Length: 85
Length: 357
Image 1 (tube, rainbow over the protein chains, first blue to last red):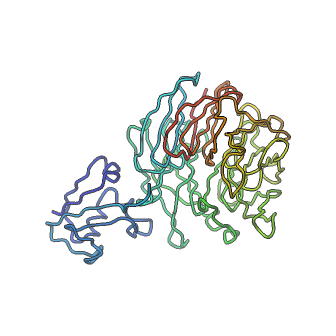
Image 2: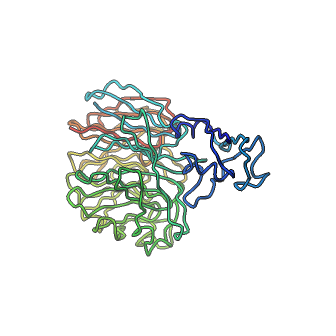
Image 3: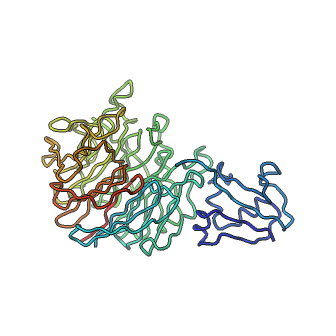
C-alpha cells in the first residue's frame, strides 16, 4: 500500500485526515482516488501547476510525472508551492 | 442576532452581536488558507456559502450548515472544455429567491455565471453569458474579468442582472437563458468610444428590494442610477461627491432614494479622498451627496473592495463597511455615526450582513 501525506489545508478538506494508505499502480491513480482530487486537478483533469508531488522524496517530475509507477511501498507527499505573504 | 460575514485574504471571520449592534464578538478563523472573496448566509435555510480561492488549489465554493463549524466543498464546478476557458476565480454567491429551494448563483472569472439547483454541490455554467455574442469585446479589469454582481428581481422569477468588469451590466428576462447589455448612458472613458454597448467597467450593481426597477451602480467611471431596469442610466457624481471613482455600494432597504458610496481618488490612486475615510450618502436619488463621517477615523488612506459594504434589513437598518486594512465599521443610524466593530483582521475582501426581521 502506498502512503499519501497531505498538507494541512488539504487534510482539512479531507475531513482532517492527513495520511491515506491506498492501492495504486501509478501516482496519477493514487492522486485521483483522494477525496480532495478536485482541488489538485482542475476541470480539465490536469494537475494544478503549483501542486508538487514527491515520491520518496523525489519530485515526480524527475521521474515519470503522473505516470510514475508505484510498487506499493512508496510514500507520496503533496506540497503546495511556497509563495505569497 | 446579527452576523457579519467578513471574507478576508486569510479565511472567514464572523462578527456576532445582538440586534442593538453595539458589542461584537469575533468567531473564526474559518476556512484557513482560503481567500474568501465573498460569503453569504442563505436567508431560506441559514446555510453559509463562501466563494473561496487558493493560489495553489484554485477556485471553489464552500458551504456550512452549522454556522461555520464544518464545511463541504462544491463537487462539480468548472468550465466546459469546448469553451477553451478555465475557471479562474469565484467571486460572488447569491442565494435564489424564496421558494426556489436549492437554487444558488455564482459569479466568477473570466466573466462567467453558474447556477446550482442542489445547494451548491454541483454548478452548471450559464451558457447565455459564456457564449454571449459580445464576449470578444469584454476585457479584464485589474482584478480579472470578474462577474461580481448578481441581482435577482424579487417580483419576477425570470428577471435578473449580472455585473461584469469590464463587460458591463447584463439583464435577463428569461431566468438566465439570454442576456441583454444594459449599459446605455454609462461611460467607458478608457475606450476609444466612451459610450459603447458593452465594455464598461462596472464595479458594483445593486437593485433596490422595494423598487426593483431601480438599480444603483458604482462604476469605474462614475456613480449611476437607473429607474427602468437598466435600460438607461443617469450619472450622479458631483453635487457633493469628491470623486466618481470607487468600488462598494450600499442601499437603505427602506428608502429607494438613498444610497451610500466610498469615493477614491481614481484608477491611478485607489485610496479614499483627502486622507479621510469618507462615506457619502444621498437621500434624493443622487442629486446631492453628504459625507457621513461621525466616528470614522479622521486620518485614513483607506480602500474598500467592491464586496466590502453591506446592509441588513432590521429597523433601524444597519450598514457595515470593511477596509483593506482590516477594520469593520458599523452604523445603526443610517450612517450618522459609526463604531469600529473589529480591527486588525487580515485584508478584508467582503462584508455581508445577515439579519432578517
